[in-house]
Length: 156
Image 1: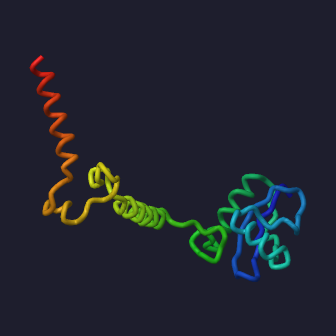
Image 2 (image 1 turned 180 degrees about the horizontal axis):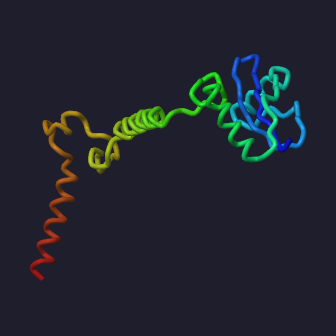
Image 3 (image 1 turned 90 degrees about the vertical axis):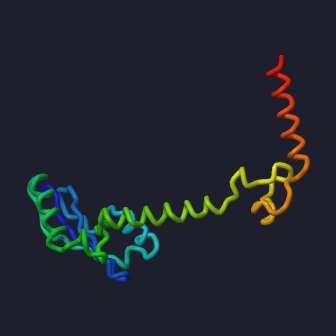
């Protein structure tokens, strides 16, 4: 034997894991290397797991082929009760779009620099933003001074 295919069951969560392990003998303590499975092992301890060998393999090629066969046979990639479950690409994209949309909404809620008062750094009143209230005179003076300076430079 060069390795084996095994099934690990988390009795507490009713989740399973199909794995492969390259070893010349069966190791009943080895439950797999999936990240979620290992987190559950830390939380629940080894007592909530049960592992059994499904098939011994004589070559690495046989190990790989048999592993793929068992994943397909048990629908481990598509059944959410398996640690081997793979979120399909469409689900990933939809989740990513939702997260991007939420992030954009947060950014849109932040006042833009153009919307901020130059004097106070705060958002202008609704009346001012709608053009109903006059702008601060100091802003107009600053603008006027800049215009005068520009004209003086042009004349020179």
